[in-house]
Length: 120
Image (cartoon, rainbow, N blue to C red; front, side, top):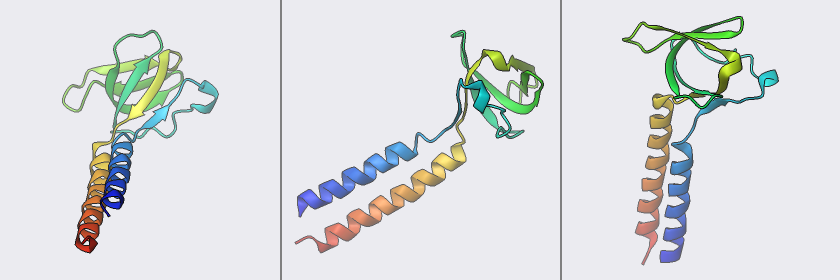
């Protein structure tokens, strides 16, 4: 019985770890990237091709060959990044990660409680 509980708990833990790393990534393949899925008013982390520091930006719009945004919600400094210099754009929406983690965590706790009540 203990092996079954251990197996269930390790499966649920691995699901929790995988879901908490959820991101939306726009990769280097420019033919697939029109950046139309980026939403204005959301914060994205932009990784540069030249290896410079990752930039966190509040996305506003795409204008021709540039991605335009601001440095943050409180910092209105305009950030203009050429699409040709972008290696990846990641959306790490905390709300989705927290909601997913809560659902998976609740399911894990329920499974452990249920299996422990059935154990001898």
